[in-house]
Image (tube, rainbow, N blue to C red; front, side, top):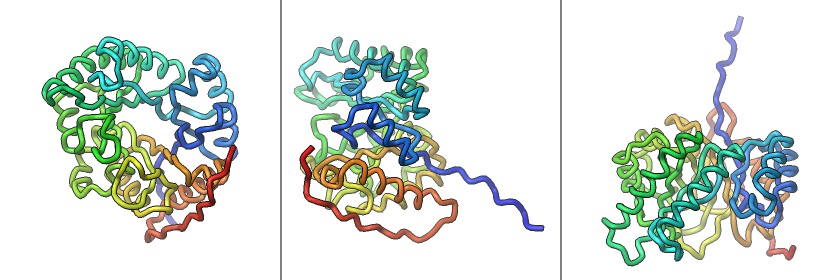
Length: 295
């Protein structure tokens, strides 16, 4: 008598609202359910468009959970707000996250601007000393996202994964963790060695493919349309013990040309292959990208 197959945990996949940029929340939820996705990453602008209470009702009816809410931050004043304004806005975002059922709020530190690096770090520490207890009280994790300097110089002042990991380790608050964007850091030679420590601090992983090195003028491509070994990276993170969500954030002319419904169909097909319990060699699928279409 053959032994029963062991239960195999599979990576949790989610779709960012930035991927379906021109759709509103009701349309997104309908299409995500149709294509078999059970999680969505909410963008605060779209939540405001429908209202927080209405968004929660739509989510409850759809049965689709919220993997994260994005984003809050800018504590260094790089976006023109005062420190107090950015902290108050982040506190509001924490409340919104709780109300829509998001356990993770993505946080961008803001760039150094005219500050010394030491001052920028102090501003971040002061902000999270205020926000960490509030997030804990609301059941929300703050996911600090490091940014590659060539891809998003205006969003943060921690350009290396090691810096972000060391900072979160030193801060050592249960509600403050990390978000990892593989579009920015999937090529990073330090990533494999960091995995054992990184997965202990990770709250979220973002996915998109790219051609060439990270750059602000490069698109966030569908998996298989670029050069990143996304399936291998997802498998390594999962094998190392990461059990949070993997969020597809595909943005640019490629997804606009493909069309959102076709993009979701492609992502479903790809992720079904990735999440099979039997390990198999990586086979890249070539995505045919149509010319951008007008909507």
